[in-house]
Image: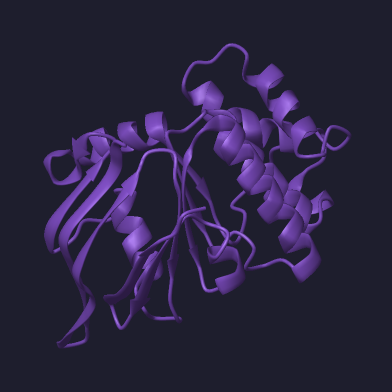
Length: 228
């Protein structure tokens, strides 16, 4: 099975006053194409920092990240943005919908940026798939948290990304709504054949994936591949 993400000897520090705070060290793992993968660990263990590095949103101090066949350290800022636009989808804990756009417009934006003439049609189909066919003209402020996250899921899958990064996708939702969003996430992912990487502190959610990477204090303490 081809590797869609390969992380080697990754280290990352941040300056805190005069001190240097090491957030990640000696990180090595890879993710196979089409698999579901969870990164878990307590708050402050480096999960979100690792996700940002893997998605090319930030640069490591040392080490290499190969994503979708490209070595990220060799790419300029613009080239990395292009790679993200072409291959990557994102789902965030706080939804990150554009408040001045309707549900349909939010889903259509990434497609329009790619010059897709069917952006509106695809957007409608996806919103119907996530159960929001009757809410396409509503603005984020008119939607519940669960509905907003479903719009965010539709947007993330709209460009049929090769890999989807989900950062605490159910973190702002109650248990029942969270379960519905989780089910949708896995269903859409299976249908699209996308590689899914979820950062979460929710062990139950992590257990639904095929591979769990556990961080503690910026280091990998467990790298468990499951036969799901």
